[in-house]
Amino acid sequence: MNTAHGSRRLAATLLAAALAGTALTVAAAPAAHAAASDAVAKLPISSYSGLAVDSVHQRVYVADRRDDNGAGTVVVYDFQGRKVSTLQHQSAVSGVALSEDSTTLYVGERGRVVSYDAGTLEQNGAHGAAYDTCGRQLAVAGGTVWSTDAYVFQDYLCATASTALDRLTDGTVSRTGWNDVGRLQLAPGARGQNRLLMGQPSDSGAANPFLASFDVSGTTPVRDAARRFADADGKGALDLKDMAASPDGSQVAVADAAAGTRLLDAGDLSDAPEQYQALPAGATSTAVAFSGDGKYLARGAQAAGSTPDLLVQSADPADRTPPLEFAFEGSLDGNGVAPRGLAWSQDGSRLFAVTRGGGPEYWLHVIQPPAVQYDARFAGDLTHSPAGAVAGEPLAVRGRLEWDGPAPAEPLKVTAVRKDATGTHRLGTATVKDDGTFAVLDEPDLVGEATYTLSFLGDLTHRPATDVTHTVTVGKAPSSIALTAPAEATMSGGVHITGTFTAQGKALPERAVLTVRRTDRLGTGTLSSVTVGADGTFAVDDLPRTRRETTYTVSWAGDDLHTGATASATVYVRR
Image (cartoon, rainbow, N blue to C red; front, side):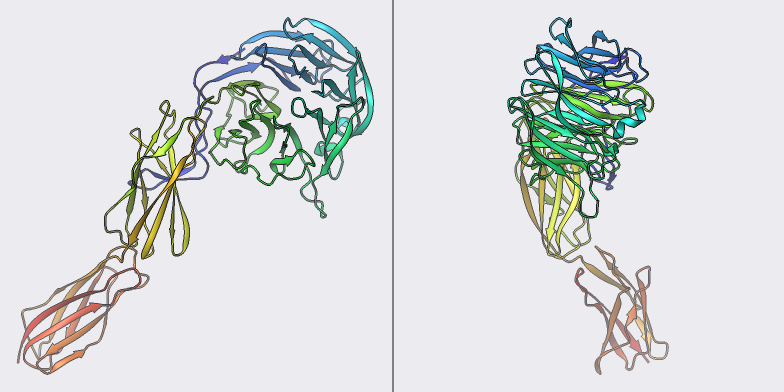
């Protein structure tokens, strides 16, 4: 067994483009954070068929099915990721389940359900069952052990086999009368609520696979809710990989390889009013699990490269705190979370994730999300510089974030938006320095009031802070004209004046056209206008109409984003 201990980063996905000269980044995904602890064990198994967590004895059970008709095993680890035992079996092992009081471990074999004393790991029962060749599923709900069985001659026929729902009572595994097509999945409802979930996989051959909920408080299961997900055109059908009931029994989370994470109301399996944010682009949902304390939801996926394969976040879908993200890459971690490969300790202090590689290789990850969250707040008022903000020029909005508790393992981020007359504009995220200060760089492109809203969405260690706003009055960018003219000229030789036009801020959509006026002893008149060159230069040529002092005035009226400019030059004209 290869076990790694200590604080480890399992690659965060932060695709960012830095804006030059500031701490501002534009983020394509939430920042990932290091887990408080992450132990990884290379599992000595060639297949994976089930996971159970014993919080009383602090053990993790991982089933190795071994489809080659060899003897299956259940490998046992402690909460630190150390292997403590191996339970050998006569035939292929599929499901594992733990009694609600953690006294008994149940293991599914081809022809029986075997039980163990969870304290001593000694076998204390073997209960005959209808022969199964497709992988017996196990779940404990309503104080009863439920299982499935399907018999076919070739494994490839399991996808469309008739699968029965069985129950273990008085040492006997018997049929309940419920059955359907495919490798039906089972999952318990919330503790104490006598509910069993059943789902049909997409490869069953059913055009519209189902999800169902059973009341198992009596001697026979009674279906009380069911749902198929495809619309009238056959689109949106369920591609079930995993399902989990929330600890309070009000909701069911479903890992759907086609739709991502579905959150359903447990009563009728309708869509919950608030849904979780989408998984990162390119990630296919494989697993879901609520922490036993109801605080967190873990969502597993299969994704390529540095795209996150695991998100750990608030169980409240309305809480948009960025999740803790992990990307599993390569021979030390696996390439993604295995279907049904997530489980929590009852107190929510540890998450266990089974990952798989490209071949028959599997890993067990032990992750400890922070158990305590601390407050965070913006300190003082926001400021901006320069004091006179103008359209099209850089503007820095500065502030400071304070937080309680230990220093964050990764730099915190604040998000920024600007609201002006044209709407709300997202500015990305700004990195918070060690002293809490940050700077958001922007280039407002509209004259008038711009209101900046800064937010800290929190992480798994820090709660979100109350937003702060700062309003900036954005003015027009200045423009200027500089003239170079001769002191004297002649009426016959004419006047030649050169100049430079400069407009700060946002570039003009077209070259500026300047107005030229001449004032002499005969009066004032307008000459032909001149167009500024690409380099900002221009020239004025004129044949004066009279002698003595002649003043040339060059002006630009300005536009929506720039102030106007005027410059004059006086030339003494001789005959």
